[in-house]
Length: 338
Image (cartoon, rainbow, N blue to C red; front, side, top):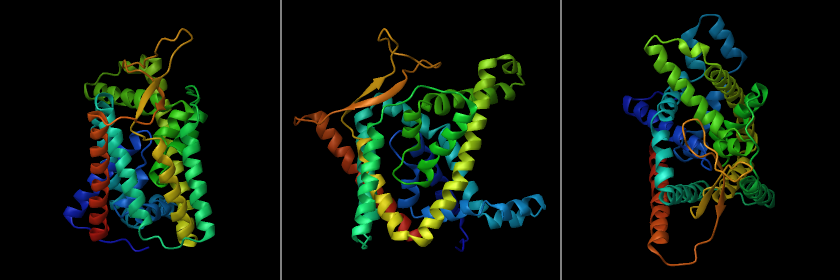
């Protein structure tokens, strides 16, 4: 695949798309891969990650940095990653607050966005063979089955954390599979995406003030080790999954798209707007809180609305807005292919 030259405006938009991917990856039930797919840069993202291989490392070790950057489409990846990093400490924080205070509106918007994504991907798909229908059905069943699983308990074993990194990053490469929701099922969402990130933020703040007292805090040091292992697992997962998906896109493109449509459709259950959170409780039934004082989310109790109310009308409006936003994003993606 030949990578294109980008103007300044293209680069700015790419950072913004990285922001959207980062925010989507943080929200349980939403996949950053869907953002990449609908915005028109999914294949370039996968093929760029594929270039992080032994040839790339030979260029890097040999000191041929410019060749290394060109080979892996480094400017594209760096702009996306920049957007994701910014999102992690900004947009995703706002989303966390929005989900806490306006859950119906947020989940309705995401529900609409996923419906819009299914429409966008399926509208040009014309290979409805029995084989692809079967693959799509398996994708739907898998997505629904994942949404019904009971979460495990938290585990900070570093080998398990490495495994969580590989699995958790799946939302960036496989549209429809939410890495954040998988981390909830593995029991490590709060540990990896809340506590360890807050530990990094606090550590960076301390370093700016030349305060090294955190070295004597075993809990902080442990969280930093957990975050480092999670990051290593995520990088490993990105490279390995991208090579696998790149192979599938090259040799089984229609079958892969059918599976992606199925995964996305199956994930609708995870972002179903009408639900109440189920928080982790101890043996006495007391809600458990993390170190920053937030209740620890375990899962959701979903229900079907039965009345015509302002509450439900609001949900319908935000579902519509979510659908429209994805259609608008897809139109932009078709025009620019950034």
